[in-house]
Length: 629
Image (cartoon, rainbow, N blue to C red; front, side, top):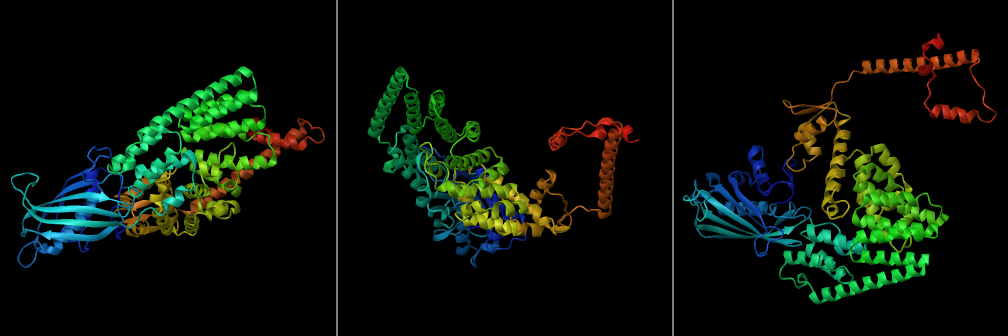
């Protein structure tokens, strides 16, 4: 089922129940008499009886990824001259119903399989006829979904009248349906993951391996190879178990028990050695050695994935830091551990400790850029998109080339320059108006260098500033599957995209007094099965859109305004402000006449005046109207 050209057609929504996902397109066609495409008659005869998806942790991996059963009526329009179901109708029904079944499978969201797939082969076998006026049961299953190719199977049976669900009837037609994924993730996996090192590389591989049907096997293979080069035995067993669930026949899915036992012993021995060294350092009472001992222990805990213990070890360095540089290094390592642990309070508190430090100018510049990037990431994780955008916009282009700080290569072990462009661009789109986007983003020479790394983000922002909202949203939708595979963007994509869409609708409607709902649906294709009418109603109810909906004429209407009333209101406000200013001057003149003004010493006039204004003192409110009488 390829992406529908009809803007009103429903889109895939992974949050919905499986049965609802499988039948949403059939329901849409039945409820819309204006749908007159080639498959309209065939689809209107279908009723979904059941739909199931294989459990992600199912022990039997030979089970189909998804199954569905349909009840189908054979009308005259689908028969040949002999009164039997036409061969073309058989292939059409198999094509549509097996494709609908793909949307019932687990973990297809963000892979391209949920909507962007087309037929490669369709081999049908015709065994017995089904006559006009009869019912039949169609059973479909998704056998495999790979990176680009998939396979579905289907069987049409005569309806068994002895059973309520019609199962068990004679087999009349069968098919094997080869599918092709036309919209896999846009980035090249190898070049993408090569940008990262250390723990963030492992975490990104694990996310891709557990969420992307298209890339899961490659990601888990890379994660297993990376884990075996490190010390984290628990992570290694985690990814091997996941691979075994996906493909029981893959040899890499079987844990290397000998490696696990050997590495466990090495880890235990190394931990005992580091603890013994730290104990000796404490006995020697050499502060620098003790600090280095805690530092080594923190690095060890990080390498085995125990981030809580790593954070405790780094925090214990505080009492043994001799210089400001030592304190800065300790804070940076606490920030890194906080990011790995998603402890954003720790991250922000340690950034606030680094910022006021007195350091060399060149070191201060590097740390300021790094702190801005980390704070942006913190605000993004907390859902403060405007603050995140402002911090990312402050990051210097030198961030991508600075050397390792505190033995951490931040632009590879935390986030890259491409990430800053994407995170900053999306947060800005979601939280800033067009004038701010133009002034703070597109005209920002420093951030423009980041945008050159991700030209589609710059193009989307330019289109939004140019009031081309439909094209802007199309670009973002084209990269939605990619961003769902990002460890920091994944939880926020739905909200970010929703905010950009709401802003686009509001800005689009501003020049109009009324717009037809059909025109709005054409400009903004509905998301999921939420109609444009329901979406606009929700925006109006929460105050995001100042408009009314005419359900009779299907119009979105701007509420009437009275320019005359607005002019009167502005005039009244101006007169009130002028009256207030006059009273202030009269109060001052009366105070001077009564000798209540104390002259400030020379040179203090400006300072005292600014302090009075900052304090918010209003002589009219304080003294009453009697002064000006």
